[in-house]
Image 1 (spheres, rainbow, N blue to C red):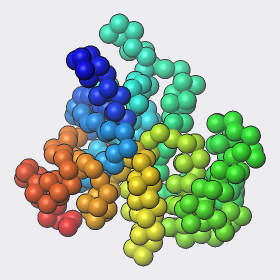
Image 2: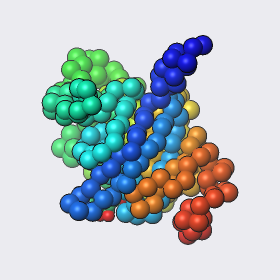
Image 3: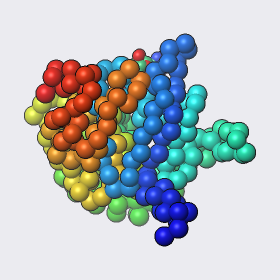
Length: 264
Ligand code: ADP
Ligand code: MG
C-alpha cells in the first residue's frame, strides 16, 4: 500500500475526528483544545468530573455549539463548516440540519413530546425531517420499539411510562433517523437505580450490532464492559485516554486516579 492509500484508508475508518477543539462561553474557555478520534463501530466512553466540558464537547459534534478553534469531522465530513482555502464558512441551516440528522443524540433528560404517543414520537422526525412515507416509517418504528422491548407501548403516552421506558423510547426515536453515529449524554443519570440496567442493556445491544457510539457516563461498569476506548476529561482537556483496562484500572494521571477513587 502506498502512503497515500494507507492514510486515506485510515481516515476512512474514523467516524469522528476532532482536532484542537476550543470553545468559550464569554471569557470562560471550557474546551481547551480537545483532540479525539473514534473509529467506525467503536464505543468511546467519556468520563470526568462535572463541569469538565463533556456535554459541551458532545454538543460541538452536532454543531449545537459553535467552536472557536479546531475542526471536527464526522464520517470524513467537516461539521458545521465548509473549508475554502484555509478559511472556514459556516454552513447554511439546511446543511447543518442534514448533518445533524445523521447523528443521533440521547440526553439525560428524555425529551419526548408529551402530547404524542410513543409511536408518534418515533414517527415525527422520520416523516418531517427524513421525509419517509408514513407506512415505511411506521414499519421501522414498530421494529425499533420491539428492539428496545417496548412493542406493546406504541400507543402509550410518555407520562404513562417509567423513566427507563421513556429513555428507551428516546433511543428508538434517535435510531429512526438511521444515524451513523450515536451520542449519549449521561443517559441513565436521571433514572432510579433499578431502571438503569434496562437502558444500559439496550445500549449494549446497539454496541454489539456495531453502532459507533460516544457515551458520556458515570456508569463505570458499562465503560469497563462495553467501551473500546475510555476518555478522561478534566477542566476542558483530555487528560488520559486508552482502553478501559488501562484508564479505569491502571490510570497514569493523578487527576484520573483521584476522580476514579471517588466514583468507583
Ligand atoms: P460537563 O458535561 O462535563 O458537566 P459542561 O460541558 O456541561 O460540563 O460544562 C462545562 C463548563 O461550561 C461549565 O463550567 C459550565 O458551567 C459551562 N457552560 C456550559 N454551557 C454553558 C452555556 N450555555 N453558557 C455558559 N456556560 C456554559
Ligand atoms: Mg454534562
